[in-house]
Image: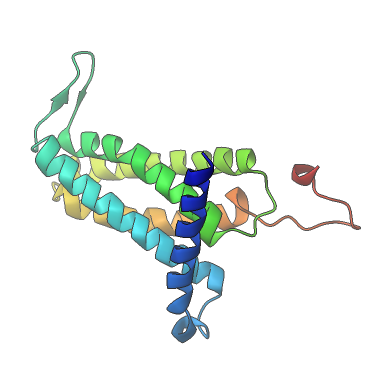
Length: 178
C-alpha cells in the first residue's frame, strides 16, 4: 500500500510540474487554479471522448446493449460504461492537482463531487437523448458538445462547492475542519 501511495505522490508531482511548466504564458489571463483545472479537465475530457468512442464503436458496435431486464441504446451504453473510469480520474485530479488547497475533508469532497457529477449525468443523458434521438445528430459529435457544457458547470460547482476553501471566522476552524 505504501508503494502505491509513493507512486501516486510521484505521479501527482510529475503532473503538477508539467502543467505548471506551461502556465507562464497564461499567467496574465487566469489564476493557476483555473489553468490547472483546465488542463486536468482537458485530460479527463480527452479520456472521456476516447473511451466513449471505443465503447460506442468497438464494444457495442453501434448496437443496442440488452441485459435482459434493461436495454441501452449504444450511445447511452457507451456513456454508462466510460463513467466509473472518468469519475475516479476526474476526482483524483480535481482533489490533488486543481483544488489541492481545499479545506474540506475527503469524504465531504467526494460526496459533493458525486452530487455535481449526478447533475452532469442528467445533463449528459438528456442532452444525448435530445441531440441523438430528436435532432438525429451523430452521437460522438453530440457528446463532445454536451461535454463542453458540463465542463463549464463542473468547474464552477467544484470550485465553489465540492472543493471550496472555507474562510475562518474569528480564528475558529470551520465546521468541516473540526
